[in-house]
Amino acid sequence: MPRPRLRALRTAAFLALLSLGLSACSPRQLVVRSVADQLAGQDAGSENDPELAREASAFYLKLSESVLRQDPDHLPLATAVAGGFTQYAYAFVAFDADRLEARDSRGAQALRERAA
Image 1: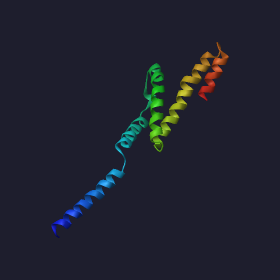
Image 2: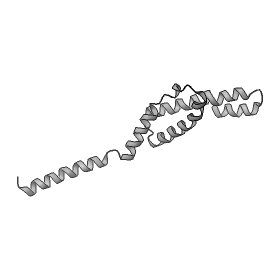
Image 3: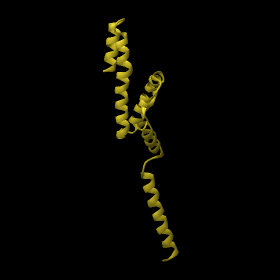
Image 4: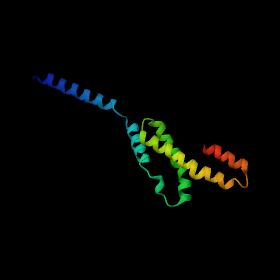
């Protein structure tokens, strides 16, 4: 095979591989997917300090929700976010409504609506 033809073949192969690589996931999407995997794998129920769990859960949920918006097809993260909001509503918001009921029935009702 003549040299110019071999060089053209190598160049064509390189360009084909380059275009294939560039059409794959962007580095940003790879980072989002990695963060989504990490957030979906967190076990929020493993925290022994209820106050720390309460204070951290809102941030965790909002962060997870933001990442899920970037990668809406990430089923494990979607499941974790749905479960996290359900747990937050029951463990913190509805519980606060129950404690508030005797002093402020309207405030308790507002919290129950928020939990729902």
